[in-house]
Image 1: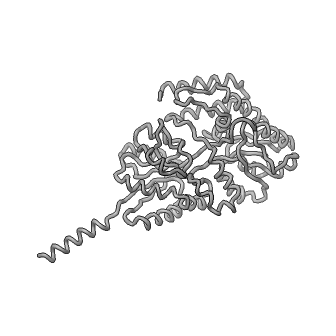
Image 2: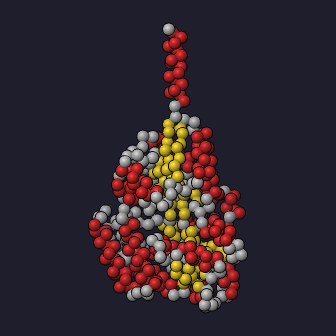
Image 3: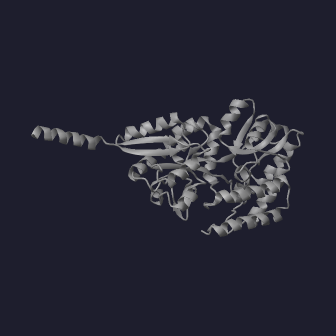
Amino acid sequence: MKKGFFIALILLMSVFVFSKTKLVFWEFMMKDDTAKVVIDEFERENPDIEVDYVQLSWATGFDKIVTAFAANSAPDILELGNTWVANFANEGVIDDLSFLKDDFSNIIGWKSAEFDGKYYGVPWLLGTRAMYYNVDLFIKAGLDPENPPQTWDELLNAVKKIDALGEDIYGFGMGVGEPQTPWQEWFLPAVWGNEGNILSEDLNTSLMTSQSVKEAAYMYQELSKYSLKSKSADLMMAFGEGKIGLWIAAGGNINKLNSTYPDTNYFVTFLPKPSQNKGFHASFAGGEILTIPSSSKNKEAAKKFIEFLVRPEITMKITKRVPTIFPSNVLAESDPWFDDHILESIFFEQNATAVPVPPHPKWVDIQFELSEAIEEIVMEYSDVDKTLEKYNKRIQTILDKNKQ
């Protein structure tokens, strides 16, 4: 009798001791092989936790997430693009993680996780834009490739000289014809760098007619006169073929250019600022934010997994395999990989002055109006003041319907 009791007790204790917490993790950035390396290491360190990994696609991921929240079947940890955080925070389906901010003093990009004064996730991987320039075209135009443009005026000067080299040569590559590129690649960063914004701090007032926006719009319209204006893929091809002098784009183009156009002689630098005495080298802050859905039953384990994922050595494992996005942890700067990847290191440094979009839950609607305004200015050469006035009213209508 006693022997049977003890065997049952041992079996019961074994179940208790060896039972694991199962975390469900949805994310976009890691491919299966990278995810396996990262998760295997976490599970070795935490034998009481098992991670079930699901990779989402950018084409269908948003809809899958919305459906999961509606069905109360969201995962324990969810990676969100930073432009989505405000939307889901406003819906009340992800946790306020503000209490974690003080624990991660080496993490940058917190603005990307902010909504209504609180932080609804932890910045994990950051992507931004920098300015590519063709060294050979610089030399042909009499420009010094060792001193690329640092200000708006220097950029316009360089663009005009390169554009004058020939009929099939363009000074600048300007993104249009896509939902985000008209504002994302440079127009909105130019506004930010000019110490302005298109929405007020409380997100209730459109600032499209402010002086900072007007100055950026006039500069952008002038720049467009010397630009090849097209979609991102077309601009990458034209830059690779040596037809564009300067082009603002993401870090992922480094590998594409090196593999497809190995003879193109180019370098990368920070985005220009308004002048030597004004503004800063602002760029668009894209970011992958780690969130914990409110429905999770395993929040302590989820927090432990997030703490693991944002370590510099872990994020560098991802960057080395997917060199289009970079660690939010500034301690990653000391990784020797950057010594052999100078161009990528410039993107890593540019992240420090990158700015996220205003955290308005209706940003998708606002960006549509913003892209239309920019395309009218640079494609149709519309009157800048009248165009900004027209779209100021449209954006204000969106804001009035969604008071914050």
